[in-house]
Length: 219
Image (tube, rainbow, N blue to C red; front, side, top):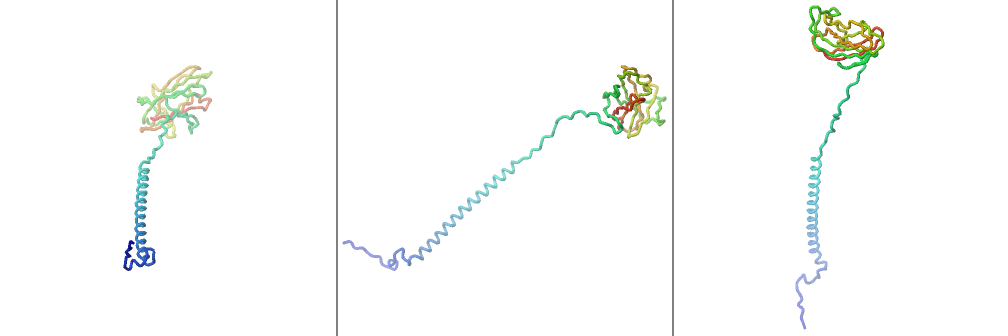
């Protein structure tokens, strides 16, 4: 018969599940739980930091690549300006343009500098400061003659009429303009010494009409 040797000592008196072994088991379980909790916390912390760094990296990249592109300016060429209505009661056009007033074609070109002779005089009696010359061209498309003394051409600077300059070669219209006839003639004005803006009013039939055109330019 096989003899079973029984262990002696205090520990052999209680089985492993007895209440006497519970303090040691509880102590081991407590340390094990703490160890597992620490590992879990460490894993969660590393994962959290990874997400934060990754989000921060993505956010920084997105912000750094944003560019605001301004809208392209409209480079469409502006259309030529149409004649405007002057406060003086007539259309304003640029020097060199042709305009029809009461079936009379009007064109004014210039200005050019004019050197008066000793015979020159200003219609307003003032001393000639600086003389400028224009060339007026009229085409009579009416059925009647345009009276020479009915062609009214005036220079206006700073809202005031300036004097006409008359000289041996600047006399204005000297003969009536017949139907279908085109006549060109010089006109000159006494203007300030400093460069300035000028309006030249042309009324081809001042005797019986108030219709006119204003030519604008710099003298």
